[in-house]
Image (cartoon, rainbow, N blue to C red; front, side, top):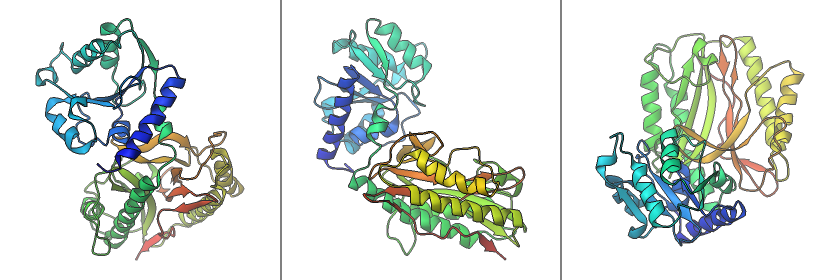
Length: 391
């Protein structure tokens, strides 16, 4: 187990309290992050149906998944073996049979088929076919939307969670330094990306910790491609007089710390240099506005007021919650840094202040992962936001 059983049970208690308030007797969680949060389960098994069931009449959650993955649940969770259910192999990718035939049988056996059951309607992993099986095979149940129910309980981190994010920060700083050291004219993006990934996973001689795969892939793009926000490394070579955007995540026990920076080979264009300077000023104002009691709107206004003063436009949001994550995303889907979002910041809330500026034919990225403290905030990383210039 990554956390103490006491912490897991505290999380479970909070979930049950919200379920009770929302008149839900049972919830079925399919988001791997929420599964991990409540049980500790960690495995690359989310390509087939799996989930965690929380019922008000059960002391522990119930994990269900492919039978061959049940040993992973025994290893990574605190659950009693009786609460780990593996469905048989003949249900895997064998229509018209489906793993939720097994799940609906379990619901009926536990007399939940006439209860109020919460499901994560907008989870990446909750498919239309899953919902159809539940509706048709538990026709007396009332299904309610439990999307983000657990995510909002995850909104404020424990000190133990913060500690893992700080380890992720060490890894992502090392990964970014590798990028700075290795980007040179004529070198392939893929070569540099391999070295960055080696650092993110293996650390380096300065930090004696290892990392894990990220919920989001490495973002690295140069020249005109840097004008797009989510392009990944190719075998293209770095060229003179081109900027490169880099967005990385350091990950420890599935807890992410993200960091973005910009590299330029040659003499930077004045427009890029000036925009980076404005963006950096906006970031400083946003950091100053990040404190308990302020809202996401307050932070957004602080950031955009600088951009507007200098006539710089940015349409996309400037940040989002970050922490526990699985592919395809490391965001936690709670707060967003944008105008008119009135979500209130609290101590131990963590977010990625992502100030990417993607223009017509070029782009730059600067970002910081931030923790709200009792009287302000702190940055997870200590890494210069200056444009890194390669001569």
